[in-house]
Length: 220
Image 1 (tube, rainbow, N blue to C red):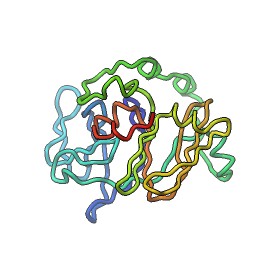
Image 2: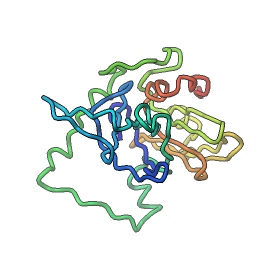
Image 3: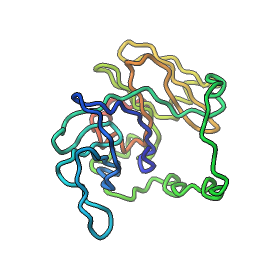
Image 4: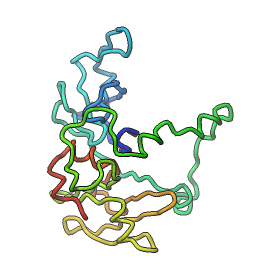
């Protein structure tokens, strides 16, 4: 999960016969965290955060792509995942268990250190390129959907409007039927569809920075 991009993604970490163990490098690319390979990296102690050596590839959290290093250009396989209200999840998966909270951290659980960041459109770190203002707010939340060669970027507001009172919107991407679901409280949007349809939720600026051509696929 990246709070700076409000993006959660789950990946298969097997690449080219290797199973990679990742760590957070502390580096950002367009405000998105870069992960390094613990199994291949050498950390050089310095004053402050460790510096990850060039032996390790660096992987972008948002799209699972290695942006530098020996595996540069490789992409992790995205696995189906969704951000859904807990009540809806439990209705559909009543056998789910969850790790209990530690009572000694009760105060920390109630804090949201990113509430101010999420409350306006300002960015805290450099992002290039940025989407044009005509495409909407940089921090509007979108569902980035990809199937084969077809792409759709669905703003949460569009999904909620088209879903109406039921919160269910039936549409298609690349000829494949999907169902986009949404709730108002808590506000979230997620995808119901076959496994071959990739979907991830994030801020619009983050998706655009990773793939500027997405502007032509933004639903309005």
